[in-house]
Length: 631
Image 1: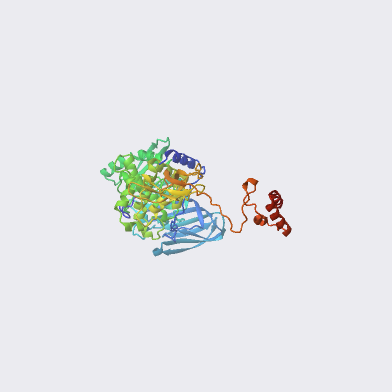
Image 2: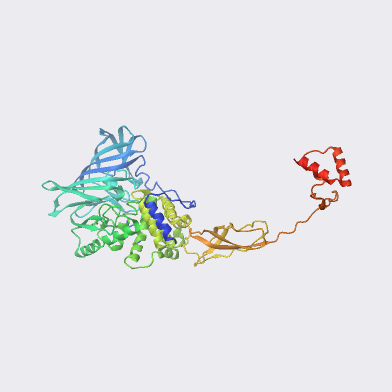
């Protein structure tokens, strides 16, 4: 989402190979990734919206649209229960429910509503306990409402001059569609809307996500528009727009060889200047999608285009396949919303507290596209550097994940700090290494819902580096983070002293130094395989490890000075007998006073005999007796 009302506006080959393996579904050996203390995802930002009790597989919507204040509809929901359920809780705000069935049987229902806590539930009592797949059919009618968020912004059923724009992010889809209205639940859709063929002499059209598969007159003055959405999509990214549009169609062939159908819907009230801008930017859609595919892999949608109308919401929104623009459009915003097709629509945050993953990426990709394609602006790596220079220290106390207040959903920590994270990653890995990570991210988690820890883990896998410390400080650290840098040198270690025959006590860390003056101890492993500690002299060892930013180094060295071992000093017990002559071949230790060391007692006659033999020169007998004892 580009939301001006809510926010202020080193190893290529290994990384590429890793990205290719991940894309192919091959498990990679992971580097050791340090545990980081990430706050838990804040699942309770909208604690009364959505449920984990079931997972919706498909929505089938049959709507009769008469005016923006008068609709009737039947929605069929196919879902899978996570556990046996007697009660099915759907999100639905406003509207009058006429009937509900569960698996074809009539079901009783009640409503729960509390604006203050964003509680709007259709509570269905299942006639029989549901387990596994089940189907709910809801018939309803009335005037859909506009939803207001805790931050004062609006979405949902937004009337326009000639119709309506139904915008879902974050929770507005429940104003017209009974649903499991959580960002983490994705489903496919069939959307059939029967609307007036004309109003005030002007053609009326119906736009949505996916592919337009039917446009059929059902009587003299009404037409059914049928949209099929086969790519799983959360309710927040679904769009429905009815109005007096010029429908602009084309076939776009991408550099990858894929041909996409474009359906763009432009309010016929657009001025000549507006149309000039729109036509120019429509012409740039192929360039944008080609560039995004080169960075992120295949386009994850089914068709493309835009919806341009006046809904007075103050933002553009990344509605699937064709983003919505509220009466204005420019190139950076168009790129922002199209990058969301990968970041946010296909790879979605599991909870709204993880939205930095998508909004930070789309904000960063604006800068990346301008620099890489338009040759405008500064290197996107400077985004992080500028943040360190310009943001007040207090700002960094607002983490990008883990906050719980819905008012913060579209704040600095989601857009701006989020973009700093991606810039810091590019600083760490370089543009090519960065591209490998984000392409693997978009490929591995295509049509999935993710959390921040998934991103840290995958970035470390693909790069072959432990990026946990670097990314942790940029995502949730509460002090000014460090911009990743290349090591200038490793500060020399003090020489180590030892003596011959004794392995030295080597330092466990070394200190890399960077151009900024930053230095941070890094664990080191010394190569001692060929070291010889037995001879006096000097040995220089080479060390390797990874610095704070996960960058490997192998240039560390330490000098080990080996001194000669002191000569052994002989000691004689004051009570010991004079040492026998070595010429007799008897070790000094083989004296009668030590013969009992084997644990065998010598009888007294034997002791006397031994002394007699020693005195008479019969040493050989004593030695023989000792050997027998030892055996």
